[in-house]
Amino acid sequence: MASLGERIKELRVSKDLTQSDIAELLNITTRQEQRYESDKSDMPISKVIILADFFDVSIDYLTGRSDDPTRK
Image 1 (cartoon, rainbow, N blue to C red):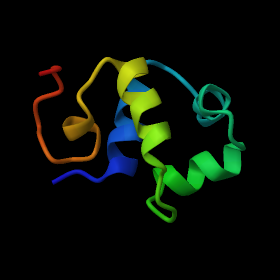
Image 2 (image 1 turned 90 degrees about the vertical axis):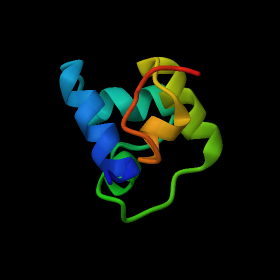
Image 3 (image 1 turned 180 degrees about the vertical axis):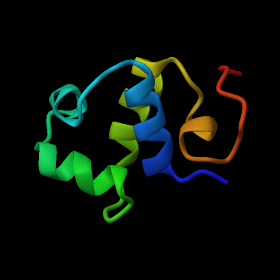
Image 4 (image 1 turned 180 degrees about the horizontal axis):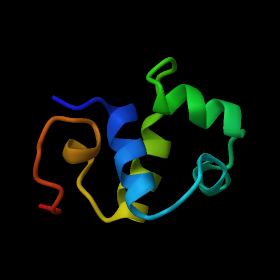
């Protein structure tokens, strides 16, 4: 099962975005985004929601609870 950080990286790379791009979207530092992506820090649900909406995937997919990225 993929972790939140792994899914963030997978989606970011698939859209040809940098960690700085995601940090800007979330209004955080690039270093904090790196911590989230490496699973060294827990991401607040408010940030998870922003990413799920941005990448148009379900929160379950983003957090690794499902392998189906479609919204329900």
